[in-house]
Picture (cartoon, rainbow, N blue to C red):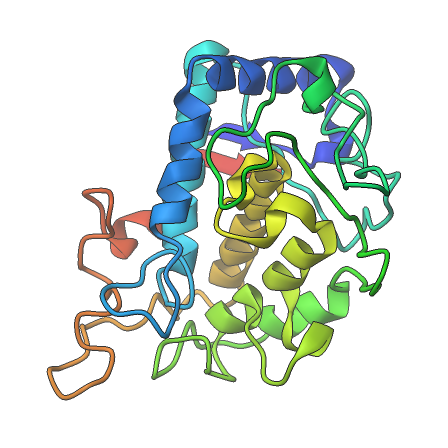
Length: 288
């Protein structure tokens, strides 16, 4: 029977408490830091050589879908009632709304060094020391809304513009494409500044702090954000049910993307699974 992923704003006090407790427990066991290391290892960009799986590629969505499932399995080994909630940033848009409450993820970072000092993931609480990252900082940081150069979260209309595109992805299958659902959702745009960050990418930048780089998993909001991104893929599939993950076949040897992206029936590192196998999760979980 499929389990349920809920909107974070609809969680009961008990559900919030159990989710937080399970997160802290897998952190205590050292399991959580493995997720951070995995994301850093697969945080490849267009300009780098080799296979891209997690970002700037068609497999952005199935890769993070499997990543979420792995985290959820780890949590459910601690408490079988726990699932990953999602943060609907088109509705909960302020620094005081869910998920930035003391009993869930805590609030914004303090002005001096952006250290989060409230909630269960604050360094001062003693349970959330950052051990894997691209800096030497040991504490969780956030800069919600970017105080010095403010930006706003994506709107429902901006999200709809991605969902309206009936094609999953298009050649050259990277961060430069201007059409296709995948990159309109992932959010690599042209130009510079906030105009070039859309949907998924802009949310990372709105949160700021450790959410800005490959070690973004160090902020638990990463999972709530990506659960909402995963929900959008589900919604897109329902809206465009005759369209599927692309490319269906790998680019040929003359293509600049040869052996650089994952086609529908190819294995998706680091797991022994294909995008095709991850398209339908209805028997595993559903969203409410």
